[in-house]
Amino acid sequence: MKRVFCACTVFITCALLALRSPAAAAVRNDFANAAFSAPFAAGLEHFYAQSFAEAQRDFERALVAVPDDTLAISFACAAAAQQPGALDVLTNGAEDAVALTPKSYVNHVRLGFDYLFESLAGRDRLQDAREEFDTALASVPDPAAAHVGLGIMRFDERSSNRAKTELLLALRTDPNDVLAREYLGELYQTDLHDPQRGLSYVIDVPNLVPRYADIAFHIGSLLAELHQPDAALTYLARGLALDPRHVGEAGQHGYTLMARIYLEQHRVPEATHELELALAGDVDTVYARTLLAKIKRGDYASPAPEATGPRQ
Image (cartoon, rainbow, N blue to C red; front, top):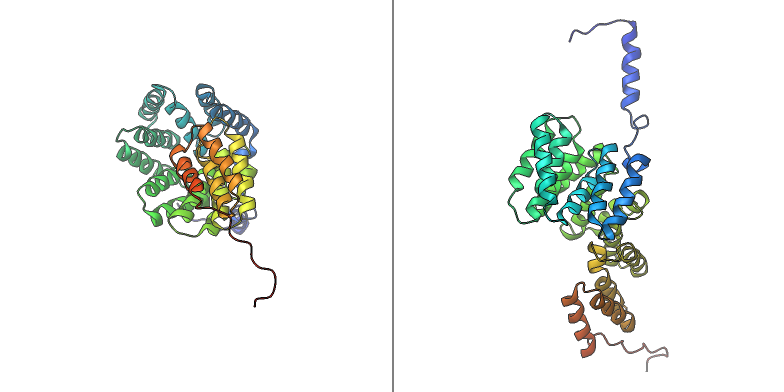
């Protein structure tokens, strides 16, 4: 392109710099868009109520408004995976969409996530998923969703630094990408052993998605590791309330994690109650029975009270 030097060049340059400056750039927030957030919230309610067909329809409605939101894509796949044959239908449709519009960034991202969930269902589609995400990377300048997909794959491969790099690249374009924040929180907790940093990525996610039960569980887990038991118990209880049918991590593991926190405080009756709730809900039963057996054996008996008088 030929460069034209004229009086207006300085003005145009300054205007472009202003548009690119952090103060002028609008931060992406999918959940501030009612056309997206309303059906997404409905999808969460249906998903945690085990109404998976309704949930999938809700998430697809949300994706009409914001086609590349990774949390909505993942939930649409997860809801389909809970219905016989529905994930195959979803994947076949995504493959057809890529064939019809091979240069579409969104189509490649959607197919990549479909292949990821196919792999979770026991089919070896990981290489196919990687190819779709790589193709998406080359399609647009700021491919946040593709970076999230690759970050998840690196996380599952226990390639911590590469996973972190991909997820942070996603947040450069979309600082409010909930799935990227969630995986970074878990990555810093489990692999990088920095729960405080992990908490910084997830602590404000409930402000974006108030009814996301699993993020409440992850926050509670991080707070427990940071020795903030009261705050941890509050978040874990919130996650359980949002997941009454025990669909996600909050419903599956919330009771036993609360019990562990109570046992660390030698609050044996409260711990026993949570473990009995786990058994009644048929969740995490092996671990719940193990902890109950230890309680019965006296492993968590209250310590002797400290002497308050002067030592002799």
